[in-house]
Image 1 (cartoon, rainbow, N blue to C red):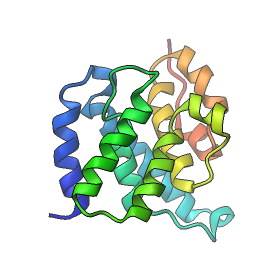
Image 2: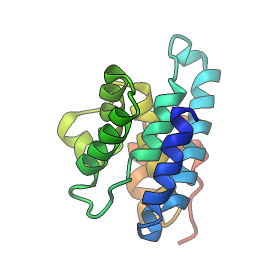
Image 3: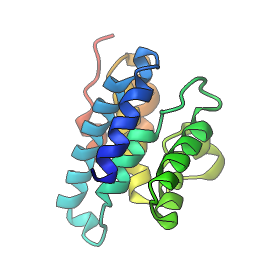
Image 4: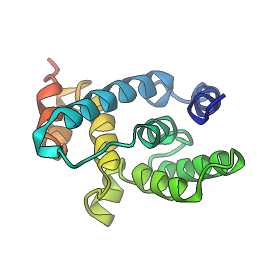
Length: 162
């Protein structure tokens, strides 16, 4: 089984332990948004020289909330889980380092502390994760829509009724 298959099996078990907002349904929705945003990037002449690493993007989506016990610590804890899992699978150290950076990019507090994402996959993960929440309530819509990296994410997310 390839690394994505192994990671998905592992992640499904871990997310089964989570609350509904951070369970497997969240991962499926974030993955759907991430792929749609990545496809828009692939098609856009503005991003002609940009190549999305789909393997790292998928792994980042799978692992980004895997250790969600509290908002304050979930990013660092999730990064640790991803690093441990992928190291055991003999995944490249260079790819693990990039994955960790991408995962840190999904957090608003890390964005405020570290600045905007540098890797395209980090920007995609941020937008995909926040798009999930922006479609849920008007408060979240108004909170996250202005923070999206991409105009096509803003166009993709529909304003909720309440």
